[in-house]
Image 1: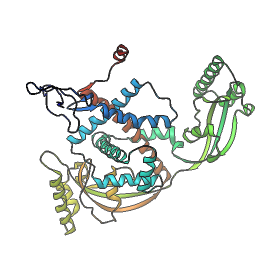
Image 2: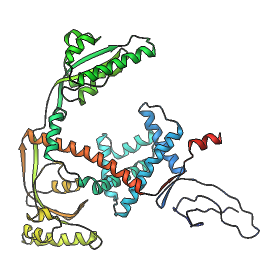
Image 3: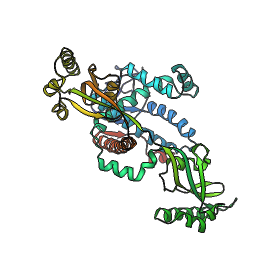
Image 4: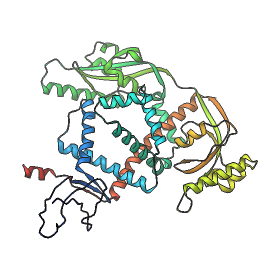
Length: 449
């Protein structure tokens, strides 16, 4: 006789997670023989949920090809297990929180996201599926992974990103240091220092050259003149020209310098770059290019209804539909916004949001707003802030490079702050959760040997 069961604190004999039957340990009827069969073991407990070995093995099978594709050596298996399991724990915690908040990705949104992924890769959905499966990845796994990514992105937007503010002072500081990063580069002027490493050199010689190159980078970043350093120390052919390599169209930059040419700010120097001939230091001396000059701005106003324990999604949607009908029937939008909108800041101004640049609002709001012509009112829609209706008042195209640069700077600063805030938030939810990892420790593995 084989009896299959699961175990959790004080709940022997009850199934924790539907399809996973874990251990066998119920008493058989008197006199009946009993066999114990271990079908799957728990590798982590995450609050009231579990992660089992088969799930971990599946995720590792997806990660290993990615590591190999990057040309990176696989870490020891114990380290790989630990890293993959930690990623799974963080994902499981986010999914639990998303479930608590009622965040769901419907099939229409999922299909649209996958179609966009296919389009970005120049494929149809059928071609994307064939490409994934030829690479050894199940299309069903890809679809489910995409759904989970959409859930976590929406969760992070609602819990973290919506609270991020970018000040004018932060934009000014970013532009002082990084304005050249925002320009679409057409040509670059590069300078170069080579610390040569003769072919067949010993590890000691190679290490000495690397140390010298790092020392030169330190001097340059401390303010030393690049041309003078190149004349004194470079083994390159252009040493006497101060290391100046001249101008290159961005598509003709030597392969070693392509990454610095695209990412360095004007005047910056790279870390030492290794090649068979030695260690190279690249400076982006100058660049040519053009920043986008045209931006379309939208003047809009909205009414927001937030959901809570009393106001459900259906309630909010119904109220906004009624308000929309009243406006279409002749009622004044501004008057209704002052009386009904939960966005107190804009409600005082009749729902007016002023002139909005691309990227100023959350994606759901921007998408709904972009479909409207001046004077039109949207159907009710949901964003991380609640339910809205929008009216587009006016649109204009601004031919202002400075404004576009500030917009791009705002996006860059916001993205950096979002990354930092999400990382901190993930650590917080990890620390606040009950997590028990049941992977064998290194000592256990050694003892088993």
